[in-house]
Length: 568
Image (cartoon, rainbow, N blue to C red):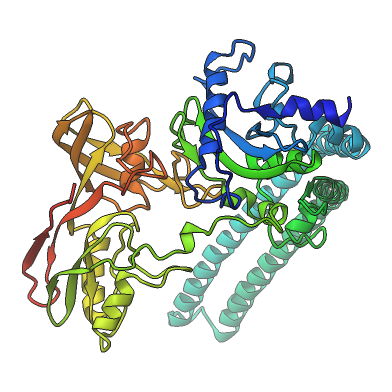
């Protein structure tokens, strides 16, 4: 099949274009973006296809998928787009069902298995050999006999030592009684003979114990020597197996390569600075090569298309552990793709990163309460509690400037950047410890106000969903019943209006994004907070507000409470 034919298969023209449609001036900043109108049109076309097609048999209501579009200009200066889905074909779908216009995988499993079939065969043979050795009758029996002999050895030696301890006590008592007797028949000579016999008895017992230990040492040594010979062979084979796997891994990383617009190709091995078989600075996340943007850019560069803009969206049911909204737009996963995308976009000018801007400029920080030892502020939405990598303006920075003589850490707890509301800061180290202890012991009463996207049926309830950080997609959190930390939230409905529900949220624990996940997750309220760009849909702001706080004053120990109404 020629490249021209492949290109015609992958390139999808727009069904219609607005006259004099402005082209993007720069390529989309992939990790946080507002989609270009052309991107939205491409997404609309692809979603229309997904909604109406009947040839692709995948059940998206059971397993949703992240799709991507890349708006491109082909060699004839025609506008169109490339389409992709995230994931490896053999992992995600039956190859026979995939429509031909989706771009190909970068890491070709079939080619990989063909190219590395000999190494994989060696690994499989070694695996079988190791299993045969470990499950052989001889090794199993030797392992059992060795363990049984060690156990019997310990038992008999311990019993002998215990018996010696008893007879030693008896001899000591007998000698004491003999020395105290005043009968004429117990002459000094008789007493000395009696004491000598007691000593001989002690020596005999010591010799018997030594002989017992020697017996078991020889017996155990015989089994141990035979067992260790087989164990040494198994360890040697396992080491050989491990080395072959490492070699295959490195060969795989070297064979998975990525282009950029300059025609420069780099492998995962090079991009992740993998030095040798023993040391790696960082490993790529599984199937990081098969995320949408790397596949889309790879095809564009191979076909000499000019990439203009991108967009990704979720289609279908959300996985249980994560939260994805059907048809919602998402940024590229930076945790999975950063090193790859950095290379592939080399020389391509992108939009400025909104993550490095300072959205807090001009925001007022309301002081709700202050005295000599503590401050309560009403943090605005989209304002950091603590300065970050790119944004220096924060609650901490402003309070530090306001109170230059404050001692100890100012921050006791934090609110998400997007969350507004009451935040406690301390001005002395002693006060910080006092209030921090209240938070740790969960004696501080907190109440949040949230506006949800839809109506919820129950008036109140409790959500218990354990949370863990999503290591493959930071800063997102995921529900994990196996490894997650316990998280509990009580909720209470305030009102319902225009298919939205205002509620109070009372977190018992303080996990990262706890309230956002508990609201949006299918096993929680199954309704995201309005404006939640991580677990729901973008809007002007996240409608989550820390509106009420009650704690004990660190000096007077009196209960103090604060309340600031939400602006929504």
